[in-house]
Image (cartoon, rainbow, N blue to C red; front, side, top):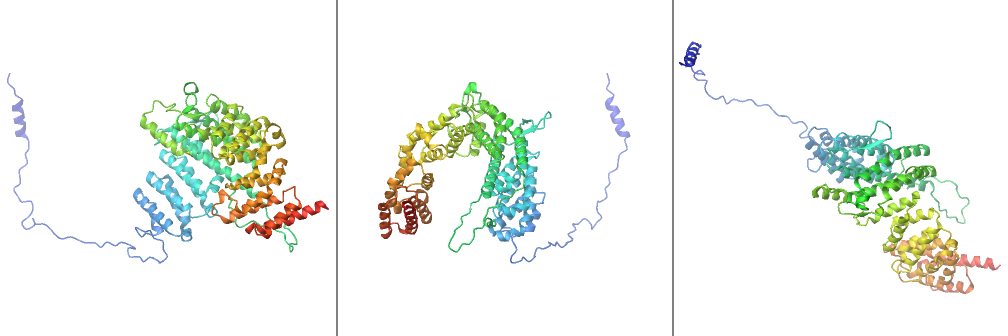
Length: 627
């Protein structure tokens, strides 16, 4: 068969119209050369040679003014913003506060929006600059401008970007460290902490459920611990604010009456050295309602967060992971702070909390779990080793102290919570007594546990604790460690009732001997003995009468362990101790003559005028009693 396809193609190509090739030159003759001419336009840089004032603030490296650096903060490039932040940081750190105050408001307005910047490096640089700025001024000076920082912080805590939300916690750290009183007054920040780890349900306004953030740079557990740690610090600042207000409202005045004094004023003006307290004038009823509403949202979240992390009690018992240790400390401290805030409104709020949440706390934190210890890896066996190590290191950084495998601090906090909520768990009392036996130093948590235990007015438990403490007080190495615990019981419980069941009178009889030894004695012990002496407890009074001569003889050479190198403070403690002369009941002429001879010999040194005044006063009282 003959193929005709190629013939058709050739015929088609011949019929196509073809363009002829031009043989003419592209450029005419004489024009095919390179044109070397060019035009120049003058470049003018404005203010390049601008003269600087002698007192104008300039950065060290770029020699830029504050206004020029603030203009860089509005640039789109993150590198330019960071350059402006570093320049402002140089100016703030290298110049005195009096010079910076004139620019403080404008700098704060320019830096605060950078909390929401998309660049993490820029946000951290802004936090560093804010920390340097707040350290240069007082809270009273910062108060008019603090609203700006709080508004941007609230936006950062509720931002869509997970990185911005996480970096907002760094800003909270700065505020609580540099200006805790101002931060504590802005209680509107508290709901934002809950928004960071949970969301509201549609069924009820106060009902919330925990959320999981897949875009976060850290795991959900570690992020929740970070948020709850800042919430704990925020509530603690509020507690300190309440204490500051109560102490400032009950300020005692010391008035010196002389022969020329004609009247004693009932009122006095505010002292100029009084600490600054910023208050928004919130009534007690509004505070109670707000705390109760917030507690109703907070407590279920705390319990659910802890249950997700802690191991099942049927499988691992009381062994928990490192993350759970940090979370447990946060949960217990938050509950204790909430209780303290409720106490400011009276007993109504505390009673409501006990009735509502005591049973739930007992079921989730105590039953089948107390006391806690650190296990191998507990409830996270599916995590790889690298992630587990990373989470553990992050949790360790958030702990207030080093990791204790026996969780002593966390267990003692749980004991304190159980005593305050009247949770009936005998294990807690046994744990406190064991901790007292094992401890070689004063622990504030144990002291707080004994305070709560004595407040329950359970004489049987007080007797048990007192007997344990008295047995430990016989050890010379522990007598000053146990002393604050026993002193706290003696001043709050009827000594006569304790004396019937314990040997507390024997311990009181040994207290004056502490003042007769060559061993250094803490100042707190001296102050406590003077307080007990003023109460005229018979056992202590008889011991003071029998040891007063030896005490006065050792007084000039007495060493105070807390006041090493501070001569004025040591002299003040010794003057206070010399007042024991006034509390001597067995005063006679022989004792008076011995003190008189010591005064003539200048035995008391710089204490001589004080001892002489006390001697005159005691003789006057003695002569009146004879008459």
